[in-house]
Length: 273
Image (cartoon, rainbow, N blue to C red):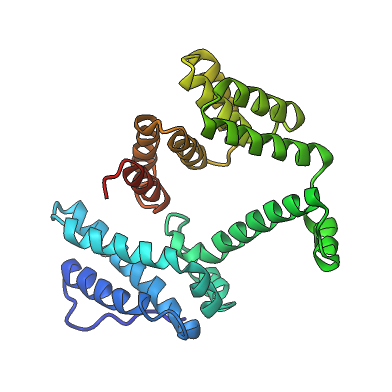
């Protein structure tokens, strides 16, 4: 295993966190071409996380170190596809050996990249199928692995139209589109999220709450629900509601990076760079 060797000078948690962050900042800038040795960065993040938790438990002010730690995580997240390509199968092997906690998301970058790829490919294939422009090879992959049902195709188009109407400010028309999408694919949480957000904007709070409860029941975790709803609130420029979801996600999942990205998106939308 490519575990980091902590220098002998690191006698205290403060020493360990600073030295781990020093090395991590170097590694995160040298991902390209590093090969499987890049896994050293993940062990350094583990070390920093452990030492920060120890310091915080003893009442030490680690705000400066916490900012450095989050910056390294953000930089890693921005190049996770490159990281996964460099690490190769060694990432799965190292993870299987160490059995890291799910909260340490950096050990599961390959799974995050895979989800991104499937989501992009699925949307791309649906759009191409609707336009009848699939190439022969893509058609084979589409039919074998990703082909949605006719109901899913129609619901997807209705969702696209609904989001366009939201952008135009025609919330009543958008409500009809998402309602039609739900009738076709009632187990898809996305149109339920939009239904709740639109009802909220129209002041129909009981209907909004019912839609949100339905959507929440379909997600694997409360985090996914909060992030998706927060992003939808950003789209309708309800930044106060979006911020409430971001802050709740941060309180409930303080060790994950995604809620902080939502907070940053809201600040950016508000012009608070």
